[in-house]
Image (cartoon, rainbow, N blue to C red; front, side, top):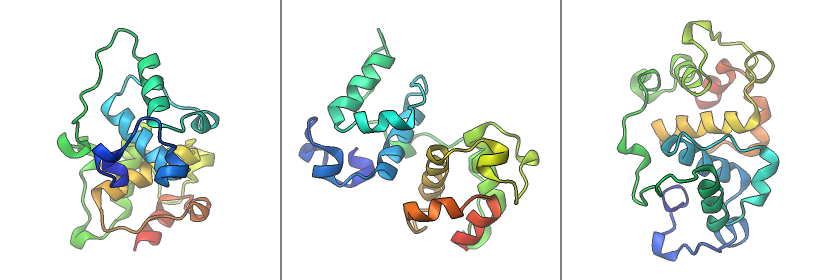
Length: 171
């Protein structure tokens, strides 16, 4: 939580309301849960309608505990960037620009589709089944690779429906 919000860990209380007290909107919540799934791959996909139930750190911890019967608790000091990204996600565009190839590699990594199957003008949702939650995960991972990229406002998500449109947005 601290890593994704910037709040010092000692300031975060397990019962704080994520949105009301910490300003964590649904997009940031998806980023946090995506980071947790990267660290704890056994966690199940979280249905979008369940997000409203996960309003506190304690609620998220309870969800993790419920998904991990008998599993040891996750170490508290894991760092997202502490492990190298998958080989398909390390492609870098020249001069810090984000190319369609970088986005294609990231989408392949997050969806399991082979990169050579992904075309720049494919509809992410209609042709690839990338829902808005997965789209936020992809854009969050892209921002992890390129921290200088701007935040994407939730109202712009619907416009970023293809690899080309995402690349153009960040061009």
